[in-house]
Image 1 (cartoon, rainbow over the protein chains, first blue to last red):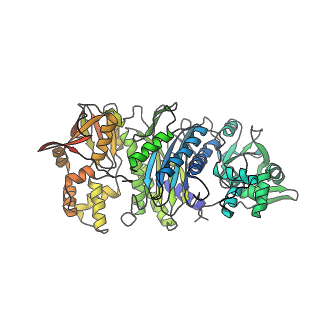
Image 2 (cartoon, rainbow over the protein chains, first blue to last red; image 1 turned 60 degrees about the vertical axis):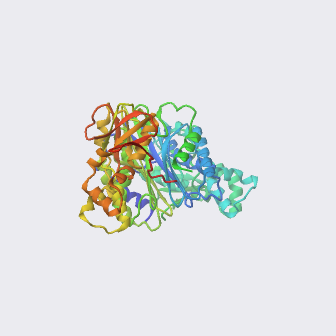
Image 3 (spheres, rainbow over the protein chains, first blue to last red; image 1 turned 135 degrees about the vertical axis):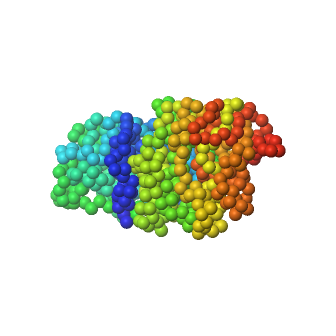
Length: 312
Length: 312
């Protein structure tokens, strides 16, 4: 069963008939929305699934897990308020590791402006960090508001984190300065809270790019009942030298990395007007042929969005 | 390092100097309190640590994990608003198991009045369920407010769940009707939301009994700088026939099970006046000799609180 089917199963099973009083948005967006203006999300980082301690320090793991959760708030245009941290710790996880993990969480928490106000500690066979963030947004930006005629806008880099992970998988000690940007993107992603603010009152839809640009573009398209046309020339124009160099080393296409690579925590939005800090990379059209279509020198073709699916 | 030392390490590492604006209570109570009146908690149930699928159906696991988190809100005198559910699923966890787990969560969520509004799905080597609950309380009841002269009050049974677990560990197929109450207490605990309401505006301190009555009484005593005197005759008077029968089968003392057994999710409070739905089991005194003292036929003796410590 795919991740999607499993989420559908949960949504059906957990549906309370109509949404309960005070619940404006339930399962299915970047975060839930509660009256009057609360935005609420949770994200888990599991050793072996989301990270490998050979390639990251525990401080990186703490930072990264916190930022991944924060990014959901950025995508709603929300202001982070506070966080809870629930840790499952493997027997081998020692006190130095715990201190390092907490340092990374604390640094990310300061960067985002959301103090850790509580949590839970438990023992398990593998280490995982589950972070819940609460934020505030008077007009949260959902996935479902994209309209034909909107521009498609991107803030932050895409593909760099996947390139960094690919390089580390080739050589856990990679040090080449040309790749520093890729490694930093994977180890120390930054939730784009300020760019999220720029969405407010302007953008029609937004999502954070955690599973790959094409995959997350398809999420907006499906939730909004439209097609997103992505301009490959615009994406190539913003590809950094580090992405191009890493793609070459990895024997991959830079555009493919940009479209499929996840965990950069870039923001993808649709908007009728320019968004500060964003670059235009496409157009929203009425639904036609596929959720995501690529526009290139040779015309337009449907794109099969293959992002990262934990259950595929 | 004990669980307590680890929590202290995290508290130090994650402290943001003074509490951030809007944070009334941070790490260390049953739940965090945010302005204006939000109460927020998280709890994890990890396979192998908190439950064993041989002794519980997945529906039980879903119910139980949801109730454990809800119980923290009950202990604050809070009204549950909504929940997030973050699941880490082992490869062997199939779709029937997922449907059963979600059914249990949904049933508990309806019983508590807190719809599941979102969550996260991830793969791991062992299954865990992390539930975050948000509630509202105009005057949340903390652990730190106990005052000498207060009565010590208990709602719900203590020791039954530990007895149920002990019986299942002896014989996973135990069916004896005399023990049904113990098995139900362990498999289907109920968060005492209504009794939590009775705390409001009356009780000075409260905690939910998740780690054992004596252990959690010591938490109140320490947070409040007092001693809690527990009357063993009062505890014996409320011990059910099922607890006594189970203690006999397990070769344990019923009073010891009542004092040390966790996961009943009873509520323990201190209050200058009677609390509806609670029974008086002791008195708060100025600090003397130990955090918890037992009052019995032979006088008073300090009690060494040995609750369940995941890291002991």
